[in-house]
Length: 344
Image 1 (cartoon, rainbow, N blue to C red):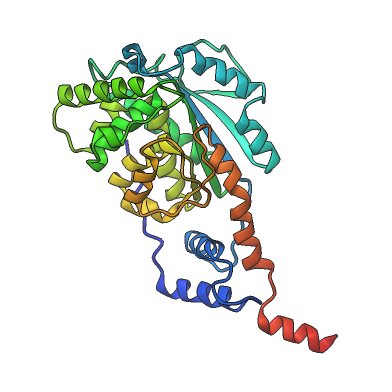
Image 2: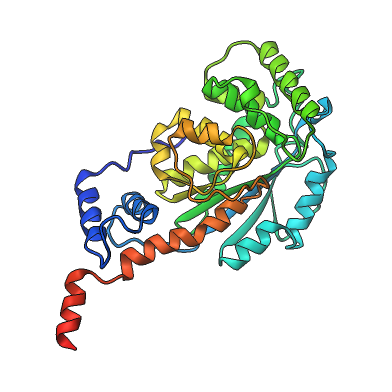
């Protein structure tokens, strides 16, 4: 399987042209703050000063996790498929926010432990009915991990738009994400784990001990795909593949919260330049996410105390991308304002 090779967006000449275009707008220098940074980044991704967003989409990948058998979640595994049904009924938060912001939404069964049957609104990419319990064995075989990566790349390869957000659903996936974070950043497990869907302090300590024991069980490893296959989930692996393909296509990548950021840890270890294409939508309230953002040297657009997942942060941040693109494309320059005033 060929993985995408991602070039840096570094282009000093274009960066200078973008800076000049932004500074020449009818405003004090730097007065639009993060929107100016965002406009420059989008211009470098799209390789033009004439930036545009079209057909934004959010992909929500759902899968189950065998490590739930260790009692690391406040909710039973069946909640995963029940929430997928909620997505399909258009009743979840991500449905509301995506609809509100004119964003296409695609739900993908990456590996839910449930038979949905054939559903028009559900993309069936099920690798298996959930991963194995990584407290006892690797979560995925290499073949399963490769299949998940390939599905993610294929899905994005068929999209028409140029901005993509990533969401997820899977009971137990904050445990997988915390394990990935620890292995890929070296941050102590205690600083990676959080309450997830609502664990008590005692539950968080148990979750920590499960991850620590699993890390000891599997021993040393450094290759990102080995770490992904050992501790990850099918939804996380598909997001990795989707991110890599999206950056190869020079799309703007909207990064959601803790679980999606753990997928980015894997992708960035393989292709560091992928970070040039990433817009970090928000800082999740899940313990560990702020440390992840520090690892990426990222400045999130929003800080709303969210910890829902589903790609909700992406949907809420999307209007800010439109604002950055629109001011660069539509706001008057000092020159055009003077000309207009003279002609009046």
